[in-house]
Image (cartoon, rainbow, N blue to C red):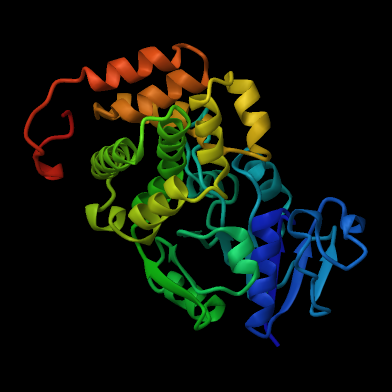
Length: 327
């Protein structure tokens, strides 16, 4: 029987553990507090989904497994990786950019564990739907030739379709940037600007992601896939997205700290907005929507001024992404 370790017993980690159990694997779910299980055997963040007996909740890392899924928030990734002692491939399931180093998840892995085989999993997935076994799809990306496909074959099921990619930059950027654009999308709805405004903003946000992906060495085709446009569509339209809820609260007039509290849980787009705008600045890529989010969530500008600045931007032809990074 194959063994799959899942690090992190939040909503996403628990959902992945439930999915892994459906592949017939013996699953070890690492939690800081294994005793936090509810009376029905479910984890607090997904209380409606009792864990089957094949999932063992533990506070010990599993040294030998067919693969290890790391599903912890970006801010804890480096610390957790530093504690892990395993030879199994690591599938990083968090999305974002480390604000101080501007590192993506695989960069953090390479810095802490040189030579460790690693991949990232990303796509349009809400945890509660994956936990319920509803149809979904995602992409696993790895630099090592053949690794992503091997992992996808072992983890995928007919209901959770896993595609493979070698464009780790595009996949990681898409997963990080969609959270920033989702905050902007939430602002448009919270401020009563309408569905037309949201659609226009999301489309322009996708153009920003594409420009930045190309500048960083990613592929434009990846941005139109599951980890790019797919995840962006879900996060910008689904009310289950914490990033969207933060934006909506900001649009309704809440202060940044109040908006985060109202959203409940970690909204990765808040910190990621600062990191991506700095990456864009260094790469000389124009990202006005991301810039606006970064300024708004830090309280540097008020909502009225952000809206006026975006609407006052000069118009021009809708040029091809490859024609220029600076537009």
